[in-house]
Length: 77
Image 1 (cartoon, rainbow, N blue to C red):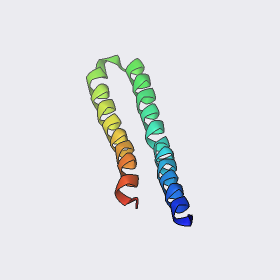
Image 2: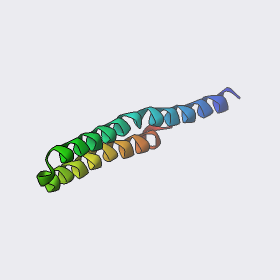
Image 3: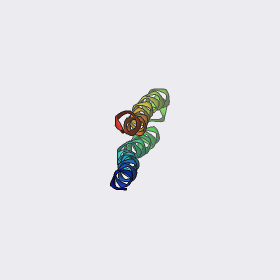
Image 4: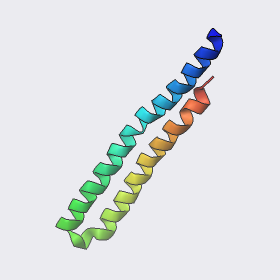
């Protein structure tokens, strides 16, 4: 009985860990696009460079989110 309970708690901790890990990339994506919008408003002639940097930053933030999603499955028992 106690082994089943420990396994249930372990699975819940992985989900909780991913939920906490998703906060960082979510904040990062918000900062990237918020600052990108401000930069586009200030210098519309640099739109191509700003947009390219936004996409690159977004990709890095989303990679962190995907790593956070996979790690509980990799290291979970």
